[in-house]
Image (tube, rainbow, N blue to C red; front, side, top):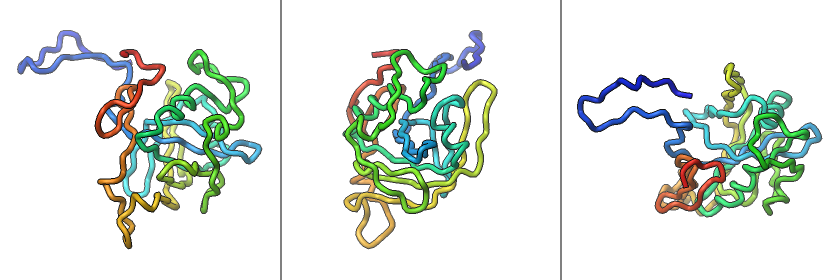
Length: 210
C-alpha cells in the first residue's frame, strides 16, 4: 500500500492526494510463455513490464508458477496482445499452471495444464528459447533471463535480454525492421480495464470500479 500524508495540500488546488490500490496507468498487455518442468509451455497474462533497448523488465508475483518456471529455466517469450483479444486474456487470468494452486491467488482461480487449448490458441516453436510462442498473437519477443530480483513483499522483477523479435508481416513497414504504428493496435490495461487506443474493450474481473 502506498504511504501518503493526508495533510498534504496542493497549493494550486488542482491535485488531490490519493492511495490507489494499483498503479496501472495504462500499459500494453502481454502474455508470458515460460517452460514447464515437463517441457510444455505455460501462459500467463501480464501488464507490469517495460523495455529499454533490448532489456525487458517484468514484474511478477514471487510465488506464482511463471516465476517458478523462470528460476528453473531462465527463458521466456513475451507475446504482445492486439486490442481485439481481451477476452482470452481475461480467461487466462483466472487460471494457474501450478497444482496445488499457490496461496494468494484470487478466489475462483483454477488449475489448467494446457492453457493454449483452454483459450483456443496454438503453440508456435520459438527460434532461440524453449517456451513456445502464441501463433494467434501478432508480436513475440524471445528473451533469456539475466537476473531475478525479489522484494520482501512477494513481488519479483525479472530482467531479460531479447534474443529474437517476430512481428506479423502486416504490422511492419515493407523492406525494413520497423513496426508501423498506424497498424499496431495494442491492448491497454488501464486501471484493470481493457482499452484499445480508443474506446474501452472490456473490464477485468478483479477491477474495483465497474
